[in-house]
Every structure is written in C-alpha cells, then in structure tokens.
Image (tube, rainbow, N blue to C red; front, top):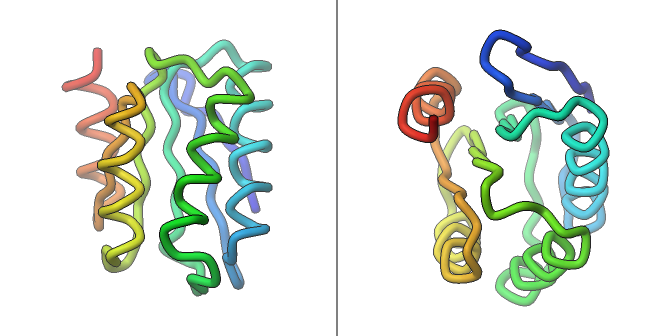
Length: 123
C-alpha cells in the first residue's frame, strides 16, 4: 500500500496492490484516516486498480467498514472516491449504504473520473 498527497488538489491517495480481503479493507480505512488526519486534506482517493479483490464477507463486510468509518469519526465533509478495475455488487452496496449513513462516497472505474469528481464536483 502506498500513500501520497496531491497537495494542489487537497487529496490523499491510498493505492493498494496484491490481495484485498476484508482485513485489508479495514487496514486501508485505518491508514486513510491517519493520512487524512495528518495532512489536513478533506478528499480521499482509494485506488484498488492494481489489486485482486476477494469478497470474503460480502454485505456484512461492507456494513462493518462503514461502522469503522463512523467509529473513527470520518467527517461527512470528507469526499471519498474508490477506483476499481470493475465495479462489483459489493461496491454498489457499499456506496449506497455509505451515502445513507451521510458519507460523500462514490465509486469509479477510472482514476481520472474519480479525481474530476473529487476536485470539481466536491469543492
């Protein structure tokens, strides 16, 4: 996992590689929260295009990640974009449930589209 800050855009990017299962998803959220807190940025790009995703805990896993975001006190003002090679049922469920809980979160299959949403539509 690599973390970078796109300072001109006020964005923290967390890029993953390798296998991403439920445990890795939790680690990504902890890492992203810490990076946002340290940087003062209010936009997050989680890029999983170089990852192989394993859906070991489909819907309950999505709900537990949202609970973790609540527990960590992710701000509803933080815009979050997820980038994947292809959107799965898990991603769609996660996006809807996160939005229902008040998070500004969208999923994309293009990093450029995700950045455009973060930098222009969430400003």
